[in-house]
Length: 343
Picture 1 (cartoon, helix red, strand yellow):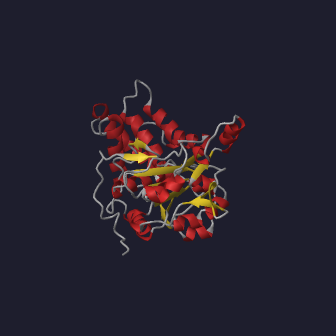
Picture 2 (tube, one colour; picture 1 turned 135 degrees about the horizontal axis):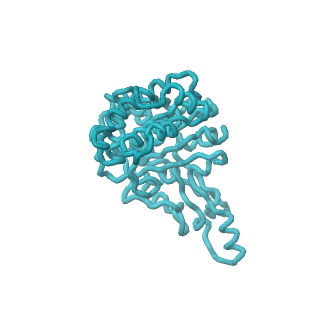
Picture 3 (cartoon, helix red, strand yellow; picture 1 turned 90 degrees about the vertical axis):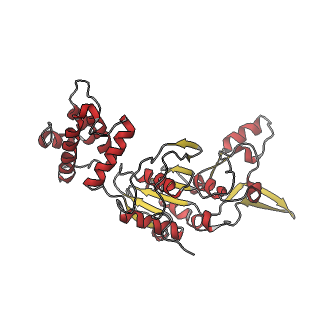
C-alpha cells in the first residue's frame, strides 16, 4: 500500500543520531528547518517522491540549501546511511554506481601481480545504496576482491542518495540512468562469470523489498535543461528563499551551532540590532533589479555570522559586503544604496 505521509508524519529528528555520509559520520543538516508547518510545499513534494519511489528533483538558487535538504530528509526519515555523488562535466552513468581502476590493474598486470578484477572496483552512491538493501548472500558475487569502497550494513536497510548538480553533466548522463533508477539494478561488465561455456556479466539481483527502496534527491541549478524522459520520472520542487519568519529561525539555529549562542546574546547583545538591519538590507538588495547575483541563504548565513562574532575593530559591514556581493557591479550597488549601519 502506498503511503504518502511517511515524511510529514515522521517525528522531529534526534540531533544526536549519527548520519553516515559516504561512510563517514557527518553533522550535516542537524537543526535543519524542514516541517509541514514551515515548508508545506516542500514537505508535500517529499511525501509524494517517497511514496511513489521517484527521485525528488530540487532546483533553486545556488546556496539555497538543496544538497543539505537531502541529508535533512534522511535524518527525519531515520535513515542512517547517505551517499553523495558530486556530478562533474565528465561524469558518466557508470560513475553513479561504481568506479573501476583499469589503469591500476594494467600496472599490476605488467608487474605480474596476481589480482582479481574486484580488487580494482569501488561501489559509489546509488550502487552502494542498492547493495545496502540486499542480504549479503544475494550479492556475494559482487563482493569479490579486496577493495569495494563500501561496507555492508549489519542488516539490509534503506539509504539516501544525493545526486548533486546533475545539470553539470551532459544530457547523456541523465538519459543513461533511467532504467537503473526505475529497476534499481545495475551490472558490472568488469566482473564476469563462466558457466556452460558462456561468459556472463555479473550484476545486482532484482530489488528485494520496495520498503527498502533508496530515497534519491537530485539537485540542479538549472544551468542547462534536463531530458524530458528524466523529468517525467521525477517529482519536482523548487527550494525557495525562506520568508522572514523562517529565515529568522534558520539564523538563530545556525548561529547557535556556529558560535555557541543566538544573536540576541552574541557580542554582548549588540549583534541583535545588526542582524535585524542585515535582514532588511538583504531584502532590499535581493529585490533590486540592478543586482546581477542575488545572495542565497548560504551567503546570508555567512553574513549573519560575521555580524554576530566580534569584528575585532574592523568594519563588520565591509565584511558583509564581501560576503553578499559577488560581482563588481553588485558591490557598487551595495556601496551606493546599502552601505553603513542604518536600516
